[in-house]
Image 1 (cartoon, helix red, strand yellow):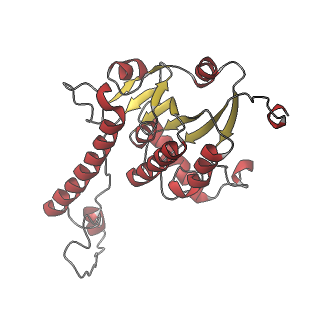
Image 2 (cartoon, helix red, strand yellow; image 1 turned 90 degrees about the vertical axis):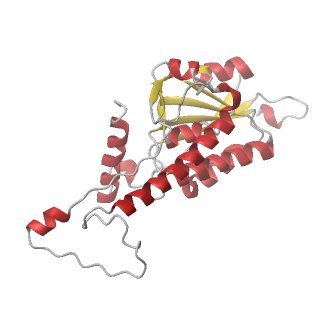
Image 3 (cartoon, one colour; image 1 turned 120 degrees about the vertical axis):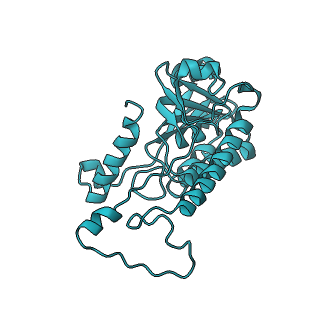
Length: 265
């Protein structure tokens, strides 16, 4: 009730925005700009938080959604003049690190995995398999590149070259974002944009994060023991809370576990 009493100063509040899971334009419970927009807006707009803390645990995903979410965080931080501090849990890799780099400062646990500043595209080739069973693939297009990298046709060198150009362009955008956000903290004599990952202590030495630290004690140290926390995150679908997930959600769960597994998690 203290905050309603005139002339009595309220305890500072930190808005804690949890960003956990794969970053994808589709899939219930995944991180994307459409589902996160109202959550992010509320975190920055409810009351006047002393800071917004990002609680990140993500192996990455869509570069577009990573960029959109990061841009929204930066826009609100600058409009409302609120500092943003990221805290990495298990992993902030690839798109997860893109989100972390949207913060003014980044901290992690000593065992947090950080980095993977790269871009990947994965597919499969099944033209020999379907040929073995006498299946004929029939595709008709207007525009010679319309069926680019069709997995049921032999790989085309021109298609591969076009894909690599696209990946390099996205990688360039990723690198520019990290360089702009981390400023002079990154070493000039080392390439950190190879897709490699590091634990938090090494990531601190490399300037990718600012140090080892956990959310609550660091916020109490900065804003006082009486700092209050308001937590914001995407709410799971009602049925999913009781384990009644559809097949699509189960497949997404397998994909997400696979993404975390590549970092030993």
